[in-house]
Image (cartoon, rainbow, N blue to C red; front, side, top):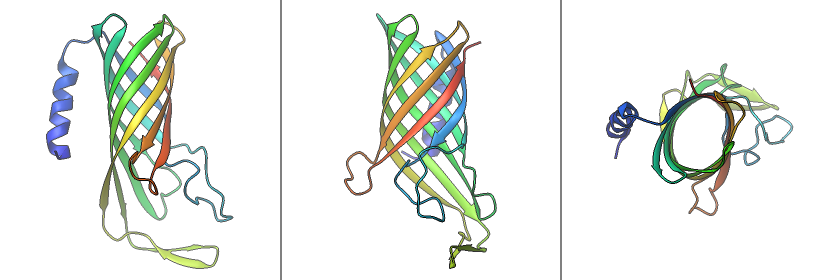
Length: 183
């Protein structure tokens, strides 16, 4: 199913009456600790890639909720060579463990678009080329997270994503760290 079919379904889902709506802002860290990101060969465990999201909470039964989310991450540190952004769709359930704690679980879908102008990039004496056209990649994930309600309108969230869960050599972990405002 293509993105053109999924997005309208997600928009329709957000039009239904819900228990609460959360507006999130934070950072998305893809493939942490997996790929070289620095000239000295080190890998990043934290990056600031602004992430903005909208989550709806639909009560299911007892303390369980359906919590779908749509978001977008803007990757930083690449502005000179290329631009990169990721659209995120999370199909989460949530369990209210206590008044102030929600456990989140589900699956995610990620579309990452990279585009550039083909210019040369020199790193540590080696020449690389930025992309000349745009390219979109797709991946899915198994997700687990926790949301802490700090006040009636604010919460803090941490979501861990296991991307490409069934691909042994390409499996990576990513995470979202965000604040959620519930008007």
